[in-house]
Length: 453
Image (cartoon, rainbow, N blue to C red; front, side, top):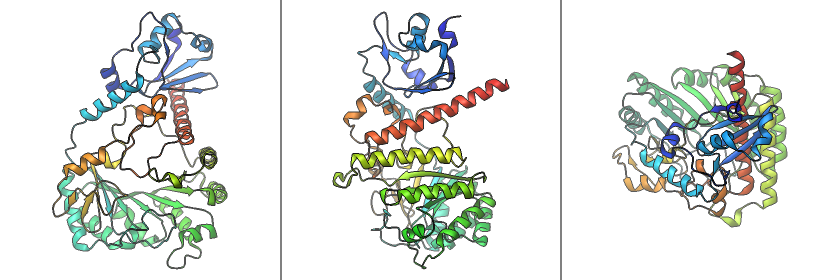
C-alpha cells in the first residue's frame, strides 16, 4: 500500500475553493509546506489543516517520519492538495485574490434574514465599561414598533427570519417586544428571536411570554463576577442588592423553559481573579444543565487608540487566562469547540453580510450594533438603501506586516469601520489554539463515525 493511501481525508477541501484554485502547483523542483497550515497532534497521529482550502487530513503515526521529507506518491498527494507548494509561490496574494473573487461571486441578497431591533438605548444597569455610555437615550414608540414589524414582513419575503432584541437593555421596553411579536404572529410570520440582555428583568410571567409570544430561542447574558463583585460592576439603578442571585436564578429558569442561555464572561486584569471564581461557580451550579453554555472574552481594545492599548505582558496574561478558562469550561461541558467551516466565509459579521439590518428606536436603519448615530442606510419611512454606506461598511482594514505569513490570513476579514478589530501576536495565538481544538473535535467525530460503520 502506498503511503498516500494511509492519509485520511477527515474534511475534504471546499468545493468552491477547489473549483477556483484547481490542482496545487509544482513540478520537479523542491516544495515547501504551505504557510496556511495548522498542525495538531493526536494520540494516534497528526492532523493537518489547510486554512485556505479548508481541508483536514489525518496522518497516522507510522507516516510521521515520511512527512519530514515527503517523496513519491505522498509528495504528489500533498502537492495536489496545496499542502506542499513551490517556495516562490505568492500564497498571500493567492489567498487575497481568492477572497476577493469569492466576495464578488456572492449574489446580492434577495431578502433580509435577520433584524436587530433596538427597543431602547436606555439600560437599568450602569456597567462602567459599556461602549454605549455616550449614546443618547431613545426609546421605541408603539407607532415605530408597528412600522418595524411591517418592514420585517415586507423585507423577509415571506420566508423564515430571525429577530435579535438589543439595547440598552431590551427588556426596559417590554411592551414593544410584545407588540412587534404579536403583530408578526397575527400576520402568520415564521420567525424566531434571540436577545442580548443582562437578564435582571426576567420573571416567570416574562419568560412564559418570551417562549410563547416572542419565540425566544436564546438569551446572551453577561456575568462579570460572583456575588457582590457582579452587583458592584453592574450597578443596577434599582440598587441591585442580590442581583447576582436574581440573574443566575433567571438563567436557570430560562433554561428550564427551553431557552438556551449563553453566558458571556467579560474580563480584564481588574476582575480576572473574580472571573476564575465565576468559572468555578458556574461549573458547580450549571455543569450538566441542558441549554446553558459559557465563554470567557477579554474586553476589547480600541484599534484606533494605541495609547490605550495593553502592554505585551498584560495581553499575554489575559490570553493565557482565556485559554485556561475555556479548558475548564469545556471539560465541564459548559463550552464546546465549534465545527470547522466547510466553505470559506465571505463576510465578517452583519455589517457586510448583505442580509441583516439594525432597526434603531427612532426607526433609523443601520448595519452594525455599534452605530446608533451614523452610517444609516435609511429609515423605516425611507428604507433606501444608501449604497455609499453599504460600500463603506464592507471596506477592509489595511493589512499589517503579520498578515504576510499568518496561517489564519485566508479566513481573516477585518472591516475598516469595525471598532473591535485589533490584531496582535497573543490574540492570534488564541485564535490558532481555538481552531486546533475544532480540528480535534472534527477528528473525534470522524473516528466515532468510522467505529459505528
